[in-house]
Picture (cartoon, rainbow, N blue to C red):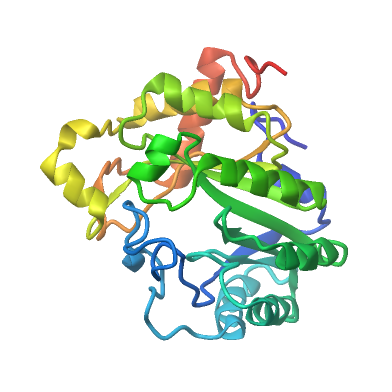
Length: 307
């Protein structure tokens, strides 16, 4: 039962599984269309491939090997735990249909794996793959998580996403219409976006048929185009203090469709790669601060939501 002021991911999963489930991240060795030249090169301006492990261009271990390592880590302490294979790094629907299906089915065949979460771009969901997913969701837990990042086309162009918000809207609608759990990933605080524009993201997304939403603060990572932009013109950026970002998250949640599951508010990049903001707060500590601020403000997800 969820007694929090927002709809949380753990409670959502408990509706579908009678046991604890844990995500195991998998890097299946894919790239992105704005890295390999199809739509562009260099990737998104905030992305450093070293922040994925193993990184793009290196030898990648098999899906089975990665799942084995992850499950071995948890199974000693939680022998009854089940697992969701989380295809996380880069664009996990960007390959031939045969190659993609082989990797998904390899993950599902591993003992203890009870479903898939697949992270991808909204411009990389071909109809034949969506048809496969529509069938797959009838035999296992399945969620497709789209990197939206912003609802403003001007921002998407500035960060070199290689797609526009209408691509996101269409992908979300088609995926949800196929009966598949559909998630969205958003970065709060991208260059040039005002407080009100960030809150407008919540209003726009609330009109879409989403299941889950992930939020995190803009992080400046070493070796990225955005880090260079920050060094040359820091006035472009509004890097939040932890307290200001917590209030932004709550402002955002108040406007958000109350049926959406908020999977997270924050992310933590490796300290060795992070330029700013370095809050020195662990994810669970941040969540505790968010809950406290919800209580102090006597508010909850969807309080200001309008149909």
